[in-house]
Amino acid sequence: MILITGGAGFIGSVLAKTLNLLGHTDIVIVDKLEDSIKWKNLRGIKYLEYIHADELFNGDYDDTIADADVVFHMGACSSTTETDMDFLMKNNVAYSQALFRFAATKNIPFIYASSAATYGDGELGYNDSHELMHQYLPLNPYGYSKQLFDEWILKEEAKPDHWYGFKFFNVYGPNEYHKDEMRSLVHKSFEQIQSKGQVKLFKSYKKEFKDGEQLRDFIYVKDVVRVMIECANPGKEEFSGIYNLGTGQARSFLDLVKSTFKAMKLESKIEFIEMPETLKNQYQYYTQAEMKKLNGPLPGFKFTTLEEGVHDYVTNYLMKPNSHL
Image (tube, rainbow, N blue to C red):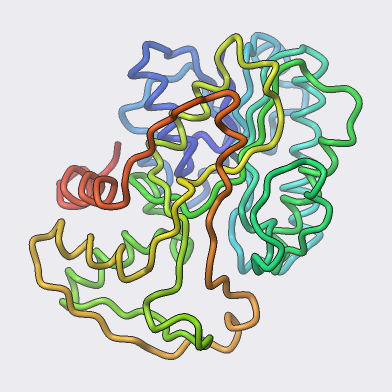
Protein backbone atom coordinates (compact mmCIF):
# COMPACT_ATOMS: atom_id res chain seq x y z
CA MET A 1 0.00 0.00 0.00
CA ILE A 2 1.15 3.54 -0.79
CA LEU A 3 0.61 6.19 1.89
CA ILE A 4 0.46 9.77 0.58
CA THR A 5 0.15 12.65 3.02
CA GLY A 6 -1.05 15.84 1.39
CA GLY A 7 -2.61 13.51 -1.16
CA ALA A 8 -5.40 15.94 -2.00
CA GLY A 9 -2.99 18.83 -2.41
CA PHE A 10 -1.18 20.09 -5.49
CA ILE A 11 1.80 17.77 -5.82
CA GLY A 12 0.29 14.94 -3.77
CA SER A 13 -2.78 14.60 -6.00
CA VAL A 14 -0.70 14.68 -9.19
CA LEU A 15 1.46 11.97 -7.61
CA ALA A 16 -1.61 9.87 -6.80
CA LYS A 17 -3.04 10.27 -10.31
CA THR A 18 0.31 9.41 -11.89
CA LEU A 19 0.55 6.29 -9.73
CA ASN A 20 -2.96 5.34 -10.93
CA LEU A 21 -1.78 5.68 -14.52
CA LEU A 22 1.09 3.33 -13.67
CA GLY A 23 -1.39 0.75 -12.37
CA HIS A 24 -1.31 1.53 -8.64
CA THR A 25 -4.65 2.00 -6.89
CA ASP A 26 -3.66 0.69 -3.45
CA ILE A 27 -3.30 4.24 -2.15
CA VAL A 28 -4.30 5.80 1.17
CA ILE A 29 -4.77 9.57 1.07
CA VAL A 30 -3.98 11.60 4.21
CA ASP A 31 -4.98 15.27 4.19
CA LYS A 32 -7.22 18.03 5.55
CA LEU A 33 -9.88 18.96 3.02
CA GLU A 34 -11.66 21.58 5.16
CA ASP A 35 -13.71 24.06 3.14
CA SER A 36 -11.31 24.59 0.24
CA ILE A 37 -11.78 23.35 -3.32
CA LYS A 38 -8.98 20.87 -2.73
CA TRP A 39 -11.48 17.99 -2.74
CA LYS A 40 -11.81 18.42 -6.51
CA ASN A 41 -8.25 17.16 -6.89
CA LEU A 42 -9.42 13.74 -5.69
CA ARG A 43 -12.05 13.31 -8.40
CA GLY A 44 -10.90 10.72 -10.88
CA ILE A 45 -8.26 9.29 -8.55
CA LYS A 46 -8.65 5.68 -7.43
CA TYR A 47 -7.64 5.16 -3.79
CA LEU A 48 -8.48 2.83 -0.92
CA GLU A 49 -9.20 5.25 1.90
CA TYR A 50 -9.07 8.86 3.02
CA ILE A 51 -7.74 9.68 6.50
CA HIS A 52 -7.90 13.12 8.09
CA ALA A 53 -4.34 14.19 8.89
CA ASP A 54 -5.15 14.87 12.55
CA GLU A 55 -6.39 11.30 12.99
CA LEU A 56 -3.52 9.40 11.39
CA PHE A 57 -1.76 8.60 14.66
CA ASN A 58 -4.72 8.45 17.07
CA GLY A 59 -4.84 4.65 16.97
CA ASP A 60 -7.95 4.27 14.82
CA TYR A 61 -5.97 3.60 11.66
CA ASP A 62 -3.10 1.52 13.00
CA ASP A 63 -4.22 -1.55 11.04
CA THR A 64 -4.56 0.48 7.84
CA ILE A 65 -1.17 2.16 7.92
CA ALA A 66 0.51 -1.07 9.05
CA ASP A 67 0.14 -2.22 5.43
CA ALA A 68 2.15 0.70 4.05
CA ASP A 69 5.01 -0.26 1.73
CA VAL A 70 6.14 3.32 1.05
CA VAL A 71 5.40 6.79 2.44
CA PHE A 72 5.23 9.90 0.27
CA HIS A 73 5.08 12.80 2.71
CA MET A 74 3.82 15.82 0.76
CA GLY A 75 1.59 17.23 3.50
CA ALA A 76 2.63 20.50 5.14
CA CYS A 77 1.71 24.13 5.48
CA SER A 78 3.42 25.53 2.38
CA SER A 79 2.55 29.20 2.82
CA THR A 80 5.66 31.37 2.77
CA THR A 81 3.66 34.11 4.52
CA GLU A 82 2.62 31.98 7.52
CA THR A 83 3.90 33.67 10.69
CA ASP A 84 2.73 31.26 13.43
CA MET A 85 5.97 29.44 14.17
CA ASP A 86 4.37 27.26 16.86
CA PHE A 87 1.90 25.99 14.27
CA LEU A 88 4.71 25.29 11.80
CA MET A 89 6.77 23.48 14.44
CA LYS A 90 3.84 21.17 15.09
CA ASN A 91 2.57 20.77 11.53
CA ASN A 92 5.78 20.79 9.47
CA VAL A 93 8.36 19.49 11.93
CA ALA A 94 6.85 17.27 14.64
CA TYR A 95 4.33 15.62 12.30
CA SER A 96 7.08 14.90 9.78
CA GLN A 97 9.27 13.43 12.51
CA ALA A 98 6.46 11.08 13.55
CA LEU A 99 6.04 9.86 9.97
CA PHE A 100 9.77 9.37 9.53
CA ARG A 101 9.96 7.32 12.73
CA PHE A 102 7.04 5.23 11.47
CA ALA A 103 8.88 4.53 8.19
CA ALA A 104 12.12 3.81 10.04
CA THR A 105 10.41 1.31 12.35
CA LYS A 106 8.93 -0.54 9.37
CA ASN A 107 12.04 0.07 7.22
CA ILE A 108 10.00 1.22 4.23
CA PRO A 109 10.92 3.97 1.73
CA PHE A 110 10.19 7.51 2.90
CA ILE A 111 10.02 10.27 0.28
CA TYR A 112 9.30 13.80 1.49
CA ALA A 113 8.95 17.38 0.33
CA SER A 114 11.52 19.89 1.48
CA SER A 115 11.82 23.31 -0.15
CA ALA A 116 14.19 25.71 -1.87
CA ALA A 117 12.93 28.24 0.71
CA THR A 118 15.58 26.75 3.01
CA TYR A 119 18.26 28.56 0.98
CA GLY A 120 17.17 32.03 2.03
CA ASP A 121 18.21 34.88 -0.25
CA GLY A 122 20.53 32.65 -2.27
CA GLU A 123 23.71 34.54 -1.34
CA LEU A 124 25.30 31.29 -0.21
CA GLY A 125 24.20 29.43 -3.32
CA TYR A 126 21.94 26.42 -3.83
CA ASN A 127 24.23 23.49 -3.09
CA ASP A 128 22.38 20.42 -1.78
CA SER A 129 25.43 18.87 -0.11
CA HIS A 130 24.49 17.56 3.34
CA GLU A 131 27.59 19.15 4.84
CA LEU A 132 26.45 22.66 3.85
CA MET A 133 22.79 22.60 4.84
CA HIS A 134 23.29 24.03 8.31
CA GLN A 135 24.73 27.27 6.93
CA TYR A 136 21.65 28.50 5.07
CA LEU A 137 19.42 31.22 6.56
CA PRO A 138 15.77 30.95 5.45
CA LEU A 139 13.91 34.23 4.98
CA ASN A 140 10.58 33.09 6.43
CA PRO A 141 9.17 30.73 9.08
CA TYR A 142 8.05 28.21 6.47
CA GLY A 143 11.56 27.86 5.08
CA TYR A 144 12.96 27.55 8.59
CA SER A 145 10.51 24.75 9.44
CA LYS A 146 11.66 22.82 6.38
CA GLN A 147 15.30 23.39 7.27
CA LEU A 148 14.71 22.12 10.81
CA PHE A 149 13.30 18.84 9.51
CA ASP A 150 16.10 18.42 6.95
CA GLU A 151 18.73 18.89 9.65
CA TRP A 152 16.88 16.61 12.07
CA ILE A 153 16.79 13.78 9.53
CA LEU A 154 20.50 14.09 8.83
CA LYS A 155 21.25 13.74 12.55
CA GLU A 156 18.67 11.02 13.23
CA GLU A 157 20.30 7.63 13.72
CA ALA A 158 17.22 5.47 13.15
CA LYS A 159 16.58 5.77 9.43
CA PRO A 160 14.93 3.48 6.89
CA ASP A 161 17.38 2.10 4.35
CA HIS A 162 15.61 4.01 1.59
CA TRP A 163 14.72 7.70 1.99
CA TYR A 164 14.77 10.88 -0.08
CA GLY A 165 14.02 14.53 0.62
CA PHE A 166 13.48 16.93 -2.28
CA LYS A 167 13.99 20.67 -2.11
CA PHE A 168 11.29 21.77 -4.54
CA PHE A 169 12.00 24.95 -6.46
CA ASN A 170 9.17 26.80 -8.27
CA VAL A 171 6.66 24.09 -9.14
CA TYR A 172 3.76 24.82 -11.49
CA GLY A 173 1.05 22.73 -13.11
CA PRO A 174 -2.48 21.33 -12.83
CA ASN A 175 -4.21 20.81 -9.47
CA GLU A 176 -2.69 23.88 -7.81
CA TYR A 177 -5.97 25.80 -7.98
CA HIS A 178 -6.77 25.76 -4.24
CA LYS A 179 -3.50 27.41 -3.24
CA ASP A 180 -4.73 31.02 -3.49
CA GLU A 181 -1.72 33.36 -3.32
CA MET A 182 0.67 30.40 -3.34
CA ARG A 183 -0.38 29.41 -6.87
CA SER A 184 2.25 29.56 -9.58
CA LEU A 185 2.77 32.61 -11.75
CA VAL A 186 1.53 30.59 -14.73
CA HIS A 187 -1.92 30.20 -13.20
CA LYS A 188 -2.03 33.77 -11.90
CA SER A 189 -0.98 35.07 -15.32
CA PHE A 190 -3.60 32.97 -17.09
CA GLU A 191 -6.34 34.39 -14.86
CA GLN A 192 -5.13 37.97 -15.36
CA ILE A 193 -4.99 37.53 -19.12
CA GLN A 194 -8.50 36.10 -19.19
CA SER A 195 -9.98 38.87 -17.05
CA LYS A 196 -7.87 41.94 -17.91
CA GLY A 197 -5.97 41.07 -21.07
CA GLN A 198 -2.63 41.81 -19.42
CA VAL A 199 -0.31 40.60 -16.65
CA LYS A 200 1.04 42.66 -13.76
CA LEU A 201 4.56 41.87 -12.51
CA PHE A 202 6.51 43.34 -9.62
CA LYS A 203 9.16 45.90 -10.44
CA SER A 204 12.77 45.08 -9.61
CA TYR A 205 14.50 46.93 -6.78
CA LYS A 206 17.98 45.64 -7.57
CA LYS A 207 19.94 47.39 -10.30
CA GLU A 208 21.41 44.12 -11.58
CA PHE A 209 17.91 42.88 -12.46
CA LYS A 210 15.69 44.73 -14.91
CA ASP A 211 11.92 44.68 -14.38
CA GLY A 212 10.65 41.19 -15.17
CA GLU A 213 14.16 39.76 -15.34
CA GLN A 214 14.03 38.32 -11.84
CA LEU A 215 14.99 34.66 -12.21
CA ARG A 216 13.46 31.45 -10.90
CA ASP A 217 14.03 27.76 -11.47
CA PHE A 218 10.55 26.77 -12.67
CA ILE A 219 9.79 23.04 -12.75
CA TYR A 220 6.70 21.30 -14.12
CA VAL A 221 4.80 19.22 -11.57
CA LYS A 222 4.81 16.19 -13.87
CA ASP A 223 8.61 16.16 -13.71
CA VAL A 224 8.52 16.45 -9.92
CA VAL A 225 6.37 13.35 -9.50
CA ARG A 226 8.37 11.38 -12.09
CA VAL A 227 11.54 12.03 -10.12
CA MET A 228 9.95 11.02 -6.82
CA ILE A 229 8.43 7.83 -8.19
CA GLU A 230 11.67 6.77 -9.86
CA CYS A 231 13.66 7.45 -6.69
CA ALA A 232 11.17 5.40 -4.65
CA ASN A 233 11.73 2.35 -6.83
CA PRO A 234 13.80 -0.59 -5.58
CA GLY A 235 17.49 -0.21 -6.28
CA LYS A 236 17.69 3.48 -5.39
CA GLU A 237 18.46 2.91 -1.69
CA GLU A 238 22.18 3.56 -2.00
CA PHE A 239 21.57 7.14 -3.11
CA SER A 240 19.33 8.05 -0.17
CA GLY A 241 19.61 11.68 0.88
CA ILE A 242 18.35 15.23 0.36
CA TYR A 243 18.31 16.58 -3.18
CA ASN A 244 17.45 19.75 -5.05
CA LEU A 245 14.53 19.40 -7.42
CA GLY A 246 14.48 22.10 -10.05
CA THR A 247 15.56 21.95 -13.67
CA GLY A 248 18.96 23.51 -13.07
CA GLN A 249 18.13 26.38 -15.42
CA ALA A 250 16.86 29.73 -14.11
CA ARG A 251 14.35 31.55 -16.32
CA SER A 252 12.88 35.03 -16.05
CA PHE A 253 9.34 35.99 -15.11
CA LEU A 254 9.11 37.58 -18.55
CA ASP A 255 9.96 34.24 -20.18
CA LEU A 256 7.19 32.56 -18.23
CA VAL A 257 4.55 35.21 -18.86
CA LYS A 258 5.37 35.45 -22.57
CA SER A 259 5.10 31.66 -22.80
CA THR A 260 1.65 31.88 -21.21
CA PHE A 261 0.48 34.51 -23.71
CA LYS A 262 1.90 32.42 -26.56
CA ALA A 263 0.08 29.28 -25.37
CA MET A 264 -3.14 31.33 -25.36
CA LYS A 265 -2.28 32.62 -28.87
CA LEU A 266 -2.26 36.24 -27.69
CA GLU A 267 0.16 39.14 -27.91
CA SER A 268 2.05 39.85 -24.67
CA LYS A 269 0.89 42.83 -22.60
CA ILE A 270 2.74 43.36 -19.30
CA GLU A 271 2.59 46.11 -16.67
CA PHE A 272 5.16 46.50 -13.87
CA ILE A 273 3.83 47.46 -10.44
CA GLU A 274 5.26 48.31 -7.02
CA MET A 275 6.05 45.43 -4.67
CA PRO A 276 4.33 45.45 -1.23
CA GLU A 277 6.68 46.53 1.55
CA THR A 278 5.99 43.28 3.42
CA LEU A 279 7.59 41.29 0.60
CA LYS A 280 10.66 43.39 -0.15
CA ASN A 281 12.81 41.96 2.66
CA GLN A 282 12.02 38.32 1.88
CA TYR A 283 11.98 38.44 -1.91
CA GLN A 284 14.29 36.17 -3.88
CA TYR A 285 15.64 37.66 -7.10
CA TYR A 286 17.41 34.53 -8.29
CA THR A 287 17.01 30.82 -7.71
CA GLN A 288 18.67 28.02 -9.65
CA ALA A 289 19.01 24.49 -8.38
CA GLU A 290 22.39 22.78 -8.52
CA MET A 291 21.37 19.46 -10.05
CA LYS A 292 24.62 17.47 -10.37
CA LYS A 293 23.86 15.38 -7.30
CA LEU A 294 20.64 13.98 -8.83
CA ASN A 295 22.75 12.36 -11.54
CA GLY A 296 23.56 9.71 -8.94
CA PRO A 297 20.11 8.10 -8.70
CA LEU A 298 18.78 9.46 -12.02
CA PRO A 299 21.58 9.91 -14.57
CA GLY A 300 20.54 11.86 -17.65
CA PHE A 301 17.02 12.71 -16.45
CA LYS A 302 15.35 14.94 -19.06
CA PHE A 303 13.30 17.83 -17.71
CA THR A 304 10.42 19.50 -19.52
CA THR A 305 11.39 22.93 -20.85
CA LEU A 306 9.54 25.98 -19.55
CA GLU A 307 7.91 26.54 -22.94
CA GLU A 308 6.79 22.90 -23.19
CA GLY A 309 5.48 22.80 -19.64
CA VAL A 310 3.55 26.07 -19.86
CA HIS A 311 2.05 25.04 -23.21
CA ASP A 312 0.89 21.69 -21.82
CA TYR A 313 -0.52 23.27 -18.66
CA VAL A 314 -2.38 26.05 -20.48
CA THR A 315 -3.72 24.14 -23.49
CA ASN A 316 -4.48 20.76 -21.90
CA TYR A 317 -5.73 21.94 -18.51
CA LEU A 318 -6.37 25.66 -17.94
CA MET A 319 -8.24 26.10 -21.22
CA LYS A 320 -10.33 22.95 -20.73
CA PRO A 321 -13.69 22.69 -18.88
CA ASN A 322 -12.06 20.23 -16.45
CA SER A 323 -8.69 21.72 -15.59
CA HIS A 324 -7.65 18.92 -13.23
CA LEU A 325 -5.23 16.14 -14.03
